[in-house]
Image (cartoon, rainbow, N blue to C red):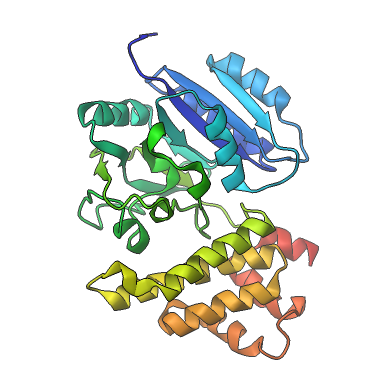
Length: 326
């Protein structure tokens, strides 16, 4: 290994995902960049993963460490725990359902080393099936490259957490927020990094892929869901602060944030808060809701806590584990 290369810490929260771990660790073993430390944060899973970590570390020659949280605390807390142990100059966040191209990390390290004024570099993310089939070029050059976090991180879907490579000293661990029904979103705007520069890592090939899967349960704990809802409500109340010329677009995006939080509350059986999310979305931009969401919102006024009422929307969201337990 070249000792002159900076160390990259790869932080991976894991909760009830034992079967998905080997594929990701094999993927990391294929990276051309070898100065990696991989930190697995076990979010109090029921199934032990120690045996998998030992086997895969040996099979793929990985420098691998782990932390086990005392109780299920959610993906955000798990990532923060990983940051406290990370010793790398750069940080790569992944979930067990992400896959990255063998050149992804090396290409982005080159970008950050060449442009020392950047705090983060991002790339486009594609959506794939669990068999590896391309489903959607999710972030395929639909926007011009951007150079600062705000307001774009709030108003446009430029990246996923896995598509970014960060300078560790630029991250405020307490600011991590991440929720989205089709994959975690990195809400960097909470960090307040309005003036800090970021840059697109351009590539003709997909450097980052995410495996499409139904939402089975929330990636965040109940308390973090409530904390996240509070954050979105703040931006709902202060949306004019951004001075965005396309205010209607911004209002619709805030509505989508509320709508995207709804299935997580349903999975957590917090139906009153699920309805509150739909209410805020309806008030901000009714067109942001699907017909199923709009119907459930209006009907749920008479019985907001009825599990039977939310069953139809759970089917629409494909909350498979919830349906099995309901």
